[in-house]
Image 1 (cartoon, rainbow, N blue to C red):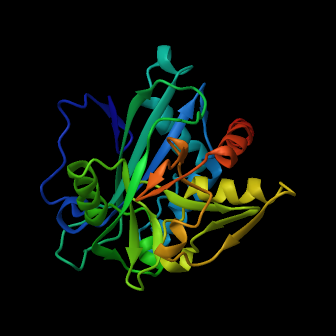
Image 2: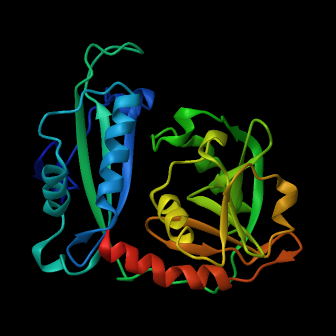
Length: 280
C-alpha cells in the first residue's frame, strides 16, 4: 500500500501523471525515514528539514501539514501487524501544478511508501567496504545541494560507476575539488582525537544522522568535532572513515585505494546513536 495525498492505494495500481512536476522538472523533495517499534526515528528533525526545504523551494505548505498529521500518514502505510517491526519509509513531495518551468501554483502533492527492514537497531557492519572518488561530475556547493531533492543524477551515475568497478560506495567532489559526501550519506574522518566532517557550505546534504553524530560527539570529552573542507589528500591520512545515513546508521569504510581503516570510533558511536534514536 502507498499513501497518495492522504488516500491509501494499492501500489501496483497507483499511477502518477506524466505531467507530474517531480518527474518532468525534478520539482520535488523527499525524506527517507526509519520507523521501528512504532516510533519514527528523529521525527522532529525530519519534519523541520522538510518544512524548511519546502519553504526554500517556495512550495505552499498545507495548513494540515503538522507533525501529528504527517506522522499519521506515515503509519497509515504500515500494516497494523507490522508496526512493531522496522521499516524504511519514503515520503515524496512535489509541486502539484501545470505549467512549464513557471508553475501556475505552488500547491503540493505527496506520496508515502514503506519497505520492511530486518534490523531493529543500528548495527556496525564489519564486512569489506571499499570506496573510491567519483570524478566524472561534481556537486555544486551552495544551498540547493544541501536539500534532499529528487535531482540525484550524479548519485545515480556514481552508483553505476561503483557497481561497474566493484566499489561499495563512492565519494563526491564539489566544483572546488573538495570531498563533500558519499553517494548515500554524509562523511566523517577520524584522525586521532579529531573527527572531521565537510561543512554544509561545501554542498553536502544537511543530513539527519550528520546532525545526530555532531551532537553526540559534542558530549564525548575525548573527541573534538571539526566542520571544515576535506581535501582528497586527507582521505589516506585518516585513521578511520565512516558514512552516515538514517537507514544504515554508521557504515565504516574498510579501504580507500591502498589505505585500510579501523572502525573503533564508529563502534563507540553506534550504541550512543541507538540510544539517541530511542529518545528522539
